[in-house]
Length: 307
Ligand SMILES: C[S@@+](CC[C@H](N)C(=O)[O-])C[C@H]1O[C@@H](n2cnc3c(N)ncnc32)[C@H](O)[C@@H]1O
Image (cartoon, rainbow, N blue to C red; front, side, top):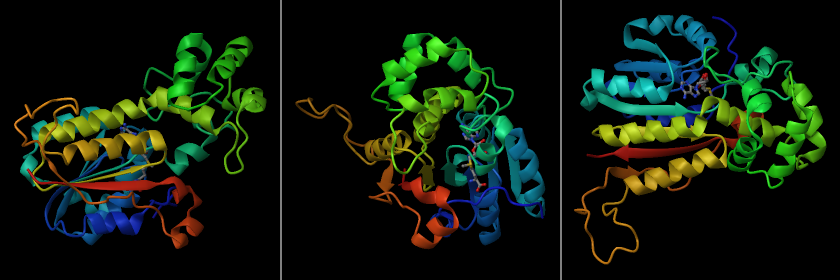
C-alpha cells in the first residue's frame, strides 16, 4: 500500500452514519485519498460506492487504493456540483442510500508547496483542479479593489478588509503565497491559535474553488432529487460552510416554508424532506484530536431524508 497522505476526520462517526446501510449506493463527493471511501466499502460488503474528486492527483492515488474494491466502485472526476447532477440522472435515486461530503482541502493539497495552498508556498495557485481557469494569481493580481474587498469580507470575515485590499493592490504583482502572506502579515489579526495569514488564504481559496457555491449547489441538487431514505452527512471546516449546512438542513426539516410574515399558510404545508439526525454538529473526540490536529475544526451534520 502507498503511504497514506491524509488521515480521514471523524472516521468512527462517519462509519457509524453509514453502518445501517446494508446495500445500495453511497456517494462520496470528496473522495480525496479514499480514507472514508475505503472504510465505508470495507465495513459494508454489499454497498456500491460512487466517488468524486476534481483533483487528478487524488484520483490517481485513490484509483490504486480502491483497487481491492474495484467491482463495487465507480470513480468520477469533476466538481461535485456538476457530477452529482449527472449521477442523479443516470442512476435509480431510490438506490442512493447515502451521500458524504468532507469539504475543503486535503492534507496533501496543503502540504504540497507547489499547489500554493499554504502560506509558505512558493506558488500562487490554490486550484483543487489544476485545469480550472481561475487561480489565486489571477484573483490577487487582477481582481479590482472592490472584488478583493468583497472576498476578504465575505469569505475571510476580515474586519479591516479595505486596508488589506489596498495593501494588496499597492504591492502587486505577487508571485507566491509566501510573498503575499509576508507582505500582509503586519495587517492581519494576530490570534493565538492560527497563523495571521490563515483568513486571507481561506478567502482566496474559497473564491478560487467557488467552495460555498459548490456546497450550495450540491445541497440544492440533493433537495431536488429527494432521495428516499438517504442519509446526507456533510463535514465542514469553517463557520461559513457550517452555517450553510445548518440552515439548509433546518429548512429541509420544516413542513411549512411560508415566509415568517405570511398571515396564513400558502405553501401546502407538506415540504418536510426528513429529519435532522444531529441537532448539534459532531466534532472530533480527544484521542482523534491528539492523533490528527487538523480534525479540530471539523464539524459533521447529518440529515435523513424520508420522502
Ligand atoms: C478533505 S479532502 C477529503 C478527504 C477524504 N475524505 C479522505 O478520507 O481521504 C477533500 C477532497 O475533496 C476534493 N474536493 C473539494 N471540493 C470539491 C468539489 N467541489 N468537487 C470535487 N472535489 C472536491 C478535494 O480535491 C480533496 O481531494
